Image 1 (cartoon, helix red, strand yellow):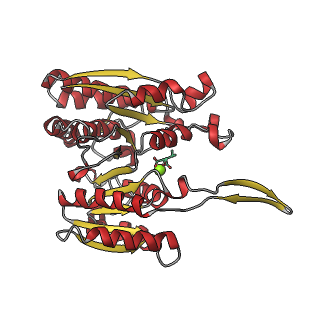
Image 2 (cartoon, helix red, strand yellow; image 1 turned 90 degrees about the vertical axis):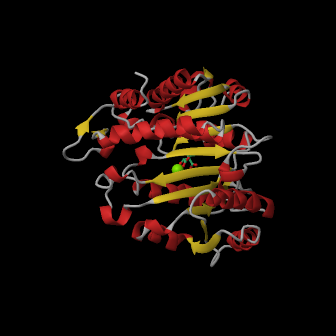
Length: 370
Ligand code: IPM
Ligand code: MG
C-alpha cells in the first residue's frame, strides 16, 4: 500500500526519537512492500523560533494532506513564559481540534520482563493490560468561558468543564467497540458526586451501554480510580473518561508499565469503527508517545524510543489496517527487551544499558531487516 505520513518531531527529545520510528517504518515498508512517503514540518517551540507560531499554516496543511501523522513531543522551559495562545502545547491542541481527533487511545500493557523496572511492586503490576480511552477535543481543555480577568481585588482565572450528549456518545462508542476486541469490560470514570457535567456523562454512557449488552460497564469516581489503578490495575480493561481526567490517569497508568518512555498513543477522529479502527469515511490519525519533550535529556542519546516506535505500530494497525506489520514491530520490541537491552529509564541490574540510537537499531534488527 501507499501512504503519506506527516512527520512532526517538535521539541526536546522529539527530533531524536521520531527518526527512530521513521526508520522502523521504512524497514517495515521495505520488508512488506509498502511505499510510505514522509514529509516533515516544524511544530511547537521549533516552529515558534522560526515563525513565531506553534502551529504554522504549513504544518497544518501538511497534516491535513496526509493519511496519518507521527508526532514527537512539544514544549520546553525556553517557551514557558509565553502567553497560552502561542505556547508550544497549542500546536498539539490545535491539531487535535482542527483534525477533530476526539478519541485518544492510550494502551498501558506491562511487558513482563519490565516488572522490576517500575517503582511499584512487581506482584501488583504483573498482568496489567488496560486501555485508556480519553476524550480529547472537549471538556475543560476547550470549554468556554475561559481566561484571566482583572477584578477589584486581584484577578480571576476561569476554565469551564462542559460536555454535550453527542460528545459523550461518540467517545463511549469508541470505548465499547474497543472493549469488544479485548476483555469486554468498560469502566467509565467521572466525578458525578460533585459535577453536573459528570452526572450527564454517567447517564449518557449508561444509555450507550444498552447497545452493547455483551460489555460489562462499571462507573468509578476519578479519585477512587486513581487509587484503584495503583492498588489493583489488573481489574481494568478499558477505561473511558474526560479530557482532563484522562490526561492525569494515563500518566499514572504509564508507571504501571515500568516507564512513561514505553507508552504509545493514537488520536482518532471521524467515524471510529470496530476496535477503534478508522473505517471508511474516517479521518487522519495522529500517533505520538504519551511522554513529553524531556528537555533535561534531549540531545544526549538517553531517551527511550520505544513509545514512539510503538506509536508507529499503532499507526499501521489503526490507520492502515496493517496488523501483521504492527505485530512484527511489537514482537521486535519484545525480543530486544527479552535479550536484556534497556535504555536508562528501564534499566535494571543484570541488563545491558544502551543508548536511544542503539535501541532503535536493535529493534530494526529484531524485525530482521538490518
Ligand atoms: C498529553 C499532554 C498534553 C495534554 C499537553 C502537552 C498539552 O500532557 O498529551 O497528555 O495535556 O493533553
Ligand atoms: Mg499528559
